[in-house]
Length: 159
Ligand SMILES: [Zn+2]
Image (cartoon, rainbow, N blue to C red):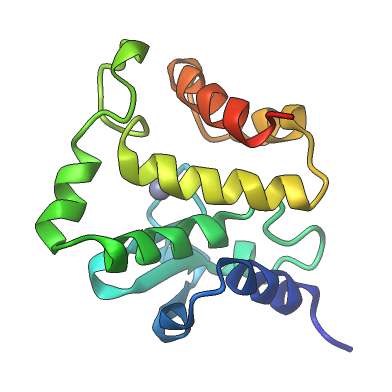
């Protein structure tokens, strides 16, 4: 029997439809070595490397329901699309929206705008509602990050 998690990750990869991403390395990290508290995944786009917490990666019940994999793959893609590694880093330090009163350029920066938009578009395709997405993000993000997410969701759920 095919494991659910493999098909789920495969469909996220295929959605981005970018052969360059076949070379991204996925490192599955045992839970006791996973130091990241909030997120079950992270990307090192410069190294085209995605790290993911083992128990999260291998979950059989609703695997990666919030689609972090496509978010991390989109980071790798955005890095490949940027003119230089410096450009990518600078984009992480720049505000995507100046009118949000953000104290920090995370997540309100052009790189996260790109990656979260890909993630939200994918979730919409999976028949997740805007409210489903806001609820899932609530487990990971603070209230002050939501004006940014709502701007992206306005675009994704327009129509
Ligand atoms: Zn990100």
